Image (cartoon, rainbow, N blue to C red; front, side):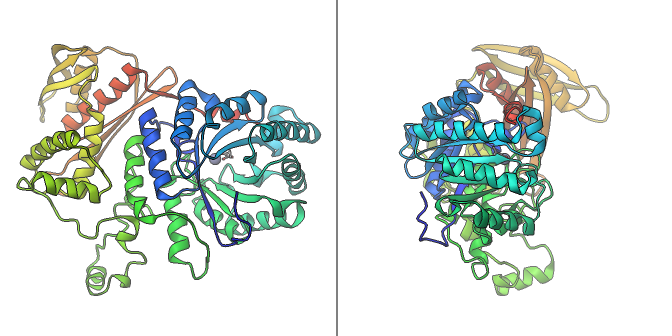
Length: 520
Ligand code: KIV
Ligand code: ZN
């Protein structure tokens, strides 16, 4: 699909919805996946890996609906090296304007061992499955999983086989984040030189971040001739994550002098996507994360602040507006009107209909009453909270009063709607949050385990909102909830209730990791 004459064009393959969603605990609902896919498409991502269709009915439906709604991007689904996976994948992607099947098998000695396939048997399997996939779809990506720990001679043979059988993109995964930049480049160069037919396909690089080198490894692979980078928003992904889309794209843009490559990405959409992915996945972005971290454009030291005021370039290598951060973070307050709110939200990437704006405006006024100045981050948290509290959920928090202090036990008085019926309970606990969670559990008994409880201040100051994330697990399924409030305990209660509403509706996710492991 790439124009081979366009040598400086690097395709961006986003796998936030597949590899990213594989991070333990990251769960996105069907609608959230569709929303993220739409944003990725708008941003100019070339290929969206929308999921792993055989993993579950939910994964299948998400990939199918993303494919149906696709506009510009190629829509890709993942399949192991067997006919059932490939059939299911094709069923899911076939309605896309441009479908792609991505099939893979672990080729390193460790993986050959697990599957009890010797080198020749594995070559036969690759030939059979790639040929089968190519008969369904003319856009086939093939990956030798754990390529960076596969013997070079054998890697050449498997890649040659996949090309001969019709693969159009060859992806070289550093599955366990083991390689380093020079080796990553040498591997791509070696394949391009040695494999017959290498010049007829696109080589892709797919790097994990276990040693913190994913972005550097991906860029080194591009310098050696790879023309597709696989990445995720915020670097979301298994273990330490994947190459971060925002890092590779901005690195190529800022250092175009030494990395003269182009992508089709509209970088001004980066910040909004980063925030949405963080909100819907439940994975907070670390403050000092490159490009999208909260501190990435903050200057603490006096010398830096002074320099930036005189000339931003003294301490900034990119402009905040290049990634869609509004240049001026002007605070809104209780006198701000509906039109100003709409304009501000539009600037932040939220397009609201009249009814939604009405609802958000009420919430905004309530927040502005409690908090003198409402900043961009407050509005973003408020938008996430509005999405979480749709109004028709099984559990709805009505009233909460908490008694806490130096003398325990702490106590929570909670009124909640449970399936439309108002219920009241009084519970104690080891701390106010524990008391509230006990109260919720008494009104909605369940066996889910609390896997994560995380609090983050949205802005500075003692009146700052807190964003709370809660992760529950039940029978191998994960349910996440988030909420924001100026009262941390209220935010905690709402986040817990949000996760329980997802549990009640069955909107959880089974981990894909087990399936991946069986893909030896
Ligand atoms: O990391 C990996 O090897 C993968 C493959 C499925 C491409 O995600
Ligand atoms: Zn991966």
